[in-house]
Length: 302
Image (cartoon, rainbow, N blue to C red; front, side, top):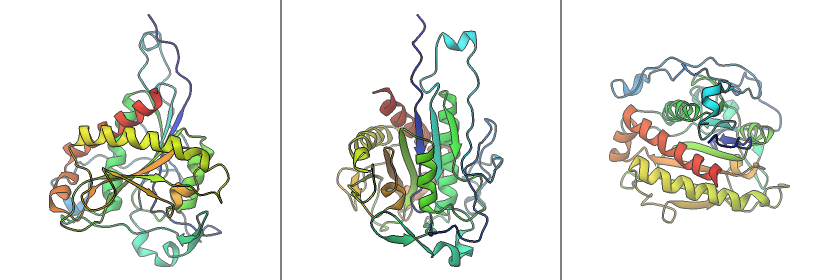
């Protein structure tokens, strides 16, 4: 029997270590970009043999664009993929040229309850893999996994060579998409002796209209991601912060400014040798991407 059509839902993956100023800095930020199914991420010179070598996506400098999934055919209508008709915005943390523009990334933006720097540079793993590169590679793998499940995918930056977007702008992309979920992909720079991942849930920010309404659904999203990611990636809960792989914060602009459910996931500790070895592996990143997609899928199916 054909499955009834699913309601259109949007999912957004946000990078929380972005940037922001009251007015956009006088640089050309990389905006959201549609990525064709065949496009993937370029190789990382800092982690040569361990990394995959797909081509860079076709970036566009727009506020947000979308990547439409293939139209249904008579055959596919009989067995719709689980994310058919859904939109997912993937926002890889940081960006490749941010370190070269401290004048830009150190400017501040209002994040609802305080001002904060436009964007952070991010950490670098003990194996030499920059966080901005890692998040770009994992985002590419996640994009492919989500598209295989029928989703329409949007990226908030079109390559790994730019500066920004700022954290407030990334949140605005999620809000403008009227997304049903937001997932921020990061790698942590924790203590060398600490291992594991943690999911950051948004706390209450009453200064931002509509934000309180997303706290409960964001927690549900975070729980689904935590469960699926631990099972699928093999990464343990963080041993150095949070509680059982969860943390709650109100100082992250990419969460504070959301009006849609969203969380951030620190997918591993890049300063720990064991975690860094996994995170440098294309095969492991493929597992991690499947696990993240599983968590998003389960959240949307409930």
